[in-house]
Length: 591
Image 1 (cartoon, rainbow, N blue to C red):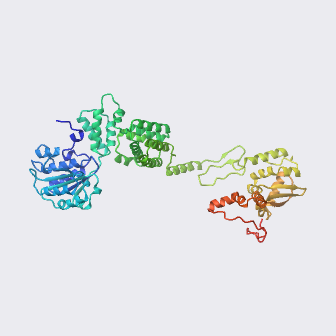
Image 2: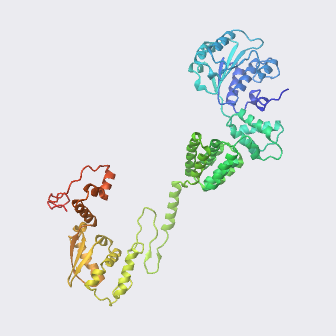
């Protein structure tokens, strides 16, 4: 007898041998026992999940010579002919080759004749979705009301292409993809029966690569059995098929979680050298992070959902310590997008390298609830700490929780600017005062020239005593000092702040304490630097420069155009005789 491939040799011959389709086989067996077999069935599902095999088993159960039974004998002539696929009463029609209306007309003529030696004439039409619309319409009446001795079994991988008029005339059974553990168990049974020694990781890789198809798994195993020999490693055995081994996936996943970009590139180079499809590897990596995400969200429910061997579950649990569900979700999101880019790319290897490098550099996210819990714990710990004394006598306040107010002394170095301390210390040393500015009875009154020259140092010192007043004295200058008065020039924008006398009195008090001289302060104003530049620009424009260019070079005008999305239409000279629109200026000429 000629050699039979594994897919044919290990094809199920009874309902009990069908793997992973219990919902279908149980219904059909009950229908046979109750005598409620329908006249038309539609089997749908992915490739290699057992549609045609179940159709043959159903035909053998209905036509078994000893008796109609849920367990055909597989010994009688009818069972053997149906198993071999050349029974006269059970024709298997290829819908792709017999898709025209003429083929359906011929079928309609033959259904009138009774079977030659069986109880029923059973038509198995594979890939029925390939029939034309005219052929489907010609089949409607026969499918709805066939003779008593006729049964139809339609099989397809694309049920959405079948007209609703056909679907409504059939009992539909959806075949499911076979899960990985069942595929793995069946592969072990085949390997044992074939007396071949293959490791479980190799069989598991085949089961995953089959993607729920028993026929694909048997075909891959067939190729491995023809290639394998003594002394070959698992990687060498899988290389012949281009199957993605889990070791490469685990290595790349661990490198991503550890931020090891070099290892990511090495993995891509390795799978490219071995001829593994980049898109398939990215899909396997997506599955790796999906499994990790399941374990991170709920370890109890993950055990019931994930079809993983114990060794892989242990590896995944070890990787959960250095990551979080938020980071895993971000990685999975990037991988799904990267898989689409690899599928459309003309250089899949380059895209895969970019995806892995991007993943290795992603920021590590933390669960906000965990962060909040940690902050609350720290708040409880720190709230019970007493104030710690420091050299100098000032207590250091306890650190409070985020969002609360932290009080500090005015003399705290974190509040006082460093340059203010240096300015005060330098002046005190030169005038016989203590380090803190206390009067030791040795400080002489400052001369008018000394006050004018040291005015910037006084302003810096004032930042540590009265920051608000020091800010108002920015860009000020001490013009002249006499025996009883001092003339101070400030910016025009601070003129109103010194009109009520409160700031002037505070200035006089701080200056008397610093310089050792009590004076009457007279305040005058000057234009801001920005106003001076604008005025010089106007004068320059009046002297022959391009006014539009002068205006466009103004930073204020550029910001206004950028923010408001405007456009400079016209430049007009300023009418200095017109009343100003400024606040509180009345009819004062514009400046």
